[in-house]
Image (cartoon, rainbow over all chains, first blue to last red; front, top):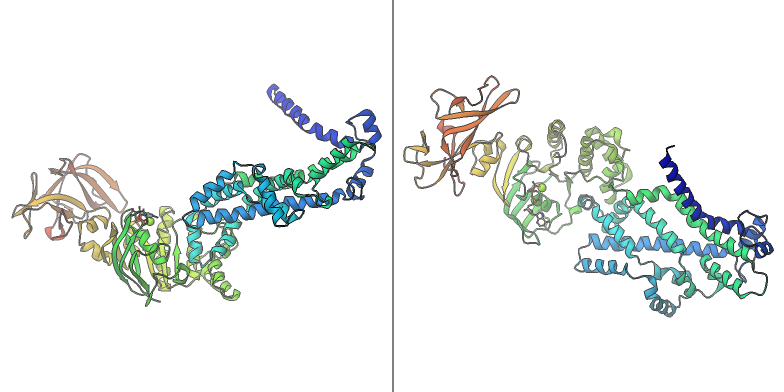
Length: 281
Length: 358
Ligand SMILES: Nc1ncnc2c1ncn2[C@@H]1O[C@H](COP(=O)(O)OP(=O)(O)OP(=O)(O)O)[C@@H](O)[C@H]1O
Ligand SMILES: [Mg+2]
C-alpha cells in the first residue's frame, strides 16, 4: 500500500468512526442498567441488559410509553413509511404521465407550478393541511397521516424526465398494437420505470420514516405514535423526572428507529444505484 | 386484402408547416408501393397518416371501402415497422410479437400458433425467449417484422426499416422483405430514401417532392420516362448527368459545346440536357470531351468522373460528368476522354418548371 492510499484510508476510517461512533455509543448504552448509566454516563462497551431492555421496550405494555409497545410504534412507522413511499410513487407517476403524454393546454404551466412547490417545505403549509385533515375528520388516522404528504414534486419531476426520454416510437407501436392509454402505462411505462420506481421508493421510505412534525401534530392518541414521535415523548418524560430516568430505553428506541431504513438501503442498494445512474432504455 | 386510396390528402402541422400538399393515390390490393424522395419531403408524414399516427388535415384516406380518417390506429388494421424497430425493451421476443394480439383478446392457442409460425418464417424461433437487447440489429429487425406479420393486417407500413443495418445485411433483408411480401401478398407501403431499395422493392414507385407526388409508376418507367427534371435526377445511380444548355434552332449549346440532333425546342428558355451515365460511350467522334479526375472501381464496372471541357454552369464552374464503363476502362487521371451519346436516349427539360420536353 502506498503512502497516499494509506493516508486516504486513514481519513476515510476516521470519518467513518466519527459518523458511526455516536450510534454505537447509543447502542452500547442501551444495553446497560439505568443505574449504571446514571452513575457512569454514556457507555462504549456493551453491558449485560440487552435482552431485558429490548424485550421490555418491544413487547411489554407500559415498557416505554404508558400503554403502547415499540412494536406497535414500529408498525405505525412502517405504515407511514410504506404508505408515504408507495403513495408518492403512484401519484407522481400518474402526474408525470399526464404531463408528458396528454397534450392539454395547461400541461406546461401545471408542470411548473408543481415544480415550484419543490421550493416550499411541508412546514409552510402545515397549518392549512392540518385544518383540511381535521375538517375531514381524519385526525389520528393513518389515512390522514399519509394522504397530505404524498403529493410529490420531486417524484413528478424525476418521472417526467424519465418518460420524456422514452422514445416516441414505443408509444406509437403500442397504439398500433391496440394498447389503451391505461394499457400503455401499465404494460410499457411501469415496467420500463422499474429501477426508477425502486430508487424513489427507497428514498421516500426513508423520508417518510423520518417524518416528525406532521405525525407530531396529527396524532394525539398514543396508539398512533410512530417511533420517531415515541423517541421525542420518551425524552420528554426523562426530563420531567420523578422516577429513575430510563435512558437505556430511550437509546433502545433510537436504535430500533434507525434499523429499518438502514436495512432497506442495505438490501436494495444495488437497485437503488442502478435506478439513479441507469440511462439505458 | 384491400387496397389503399388517398384523395387530395393534405397535412399542415400545428406549427404551420405544410408537409403534404395534396396527394392522390390508388394503391391496389397486394401491391408494394415505395415512397422515395429527399429528406423532409413528407414521406414519413404521409405514411404516418395512413397509420393513424398523424391526423389528416383534409382529404380522405380509405383502406378497402372504408374511409379511415377518424378510425383509431389500432382499428385501421395496419401494422408498421419502424426505423429504430421500437421493440418493447422489457418484453421477450414472444412478448413483443404477442402484445398486439393480446390487446385484441385473441385466445392463447391462436396467439401461440401465429407467433410460432411467424418466428419460423423469419428464422427467429430460437430467440423467442430473449429480450431485444440480447439480439443483433438484424435480428431485432426481424422481430419488428414478426410483430407486424402476426397481426395479419390489411396493410404493412415500413418507415425506412433497413437504414440502421450495415450494407450487406440491408441487401439481405431487402430481398427477404420482398419475398415475404410476395408470399403474403399484403398491400404494403415502404418509405425509403435509398434509391436501390426503392427500385428493387417497388411494384410502383412514388417520387415525392416537397409534399407532392412528382411521379408515380413502375420503377423502370420512371427511369426510362421521367416526367420531370426532379424525377430524372432522383432515380438512377449514379445520378444522371445534367448540362445546362440553350437551343439555337439547330443544336443545343453551352460555351464551345454544340450538340446537334435535337429539334422542336423553345429557343427562348433555359434548358437542361440529361444524359444517363450508362448511355455515354467512349468514341473518337463523340460530342463531349471529359478531363478525367477520378475512377471508381466497383468490381464489375467502373465509374469515371471528370469535368466536361468547353462548357460551364451559370456560375462559370466546370460541369461534372460521370461515365459508367466496363471494368477494363481505366483512363489516366487528367487524361482526356471523348464521349458520345445517341440524342434519342437523352432527355431535355425546361429549367424553370422542370418539365420534360424530350
Ligand atoms: N411534428 C411535426 N411538427 C411540425 N413539422 C413537422 C413535424 N414532423 C415533420 N414536420 C415537417 O414536415 C416535413 C416532412 O417531414 P417528414 O418527417 O415526413 O419527412 P421525410 O420525408 O420522412 O424525411 P426523412 O427522409 O428525413 O425521414 C418536414 O419539413 C418536417 O420539418
Ligand atoms: Mg422520415
